[in-house]
Length: 250
Ligand code: ZN
Image (spheres, rainbow, N blue to C red):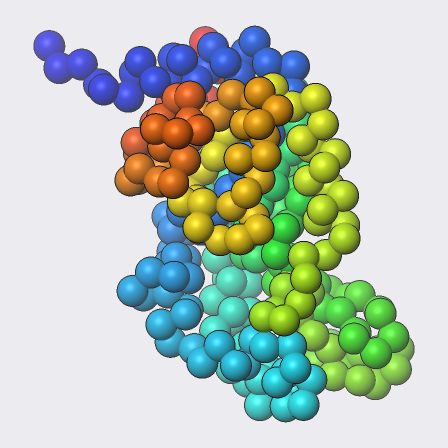
């Protein structure tokens, strides 16, 4: 009989989650790969195709129309079409069942939102909203209404995507939401992130210092594996979360 090597780690992870009073998920690009979004930093990722100056806040402010052409094509067009997968849906299910308090994500693809998760900290912002750097107005990224480049309905300035550009800090609301989720936390499920992006990658380290148990789901071992991780599930995100869901339903 063949034994599934994942069984033991799935069972350990499910036991930790069941015993926990507060569990959150921390997700990165790896959770969205199976939704057809290549990892930004991978060989097919956006960073290999785009000159990063278009995402530099200072360059953007001086060249909004040129930047918008590139940004719309590279980010909004593909991401607005993308659909959540079983891993995003599994986390939304866990939240609904009271097994998960919320999700901190580094992704700007809106897929936790589309899957029905409610408490989401979008650490790097999202591609669902646009923001006016002149008057602060925030609005849905509806290009049929706002045009391209999108214009602020309040003051007429060209809007900026509501995600973090190079040269910008992490939004205050992201820090505040993260702090709220880390308070009295017992278990963190790290999915599809290798911990190399700063400062987001520090979040699991910060949790671990407070005694939080870490469950890690990644295709390959990461900077967390073997040092911070308590239970390592080496698997694509969808399969691991589906197995976890099955173990938690039983
Ligand atoms: Zn405005």
